[in-house]
Image (tube, rainbow, N blue to C red):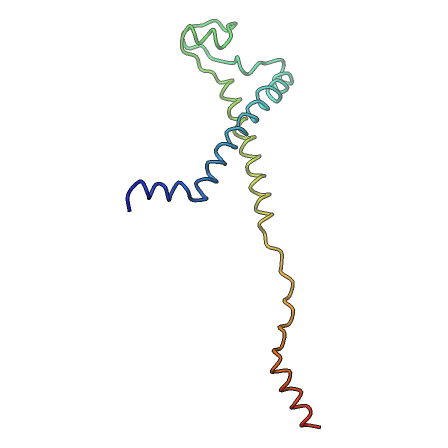
Length: 139
């Protein structure tokens, strides 16, 4: 079997297509979670903590002023952007929790419900006739 035909057989399997769809949907879902964390959750958390802006929290490694924004500080040299790290960790936790809930839900759908007991098998006609003959001979 040639490499091209093996690859074609591999690529056209259902699992590969399912994986591709999952990756595409996962990427789009990741953007939704990023927006949720960056635009909704982190501003509220920052406000509750005292008006902190996590996106501009950093430790200057080249002597940059603390009053600079993260973008300006990065232009002047290396910085340790721990605010971004906190945001990304929160993104991961939310995404992992949502995926856990989705998998849990899908597994609950896969659980088989107990099947109803099968109806008794229909007795073949020749057996029914033989029983009738037997019963009439007994009489």
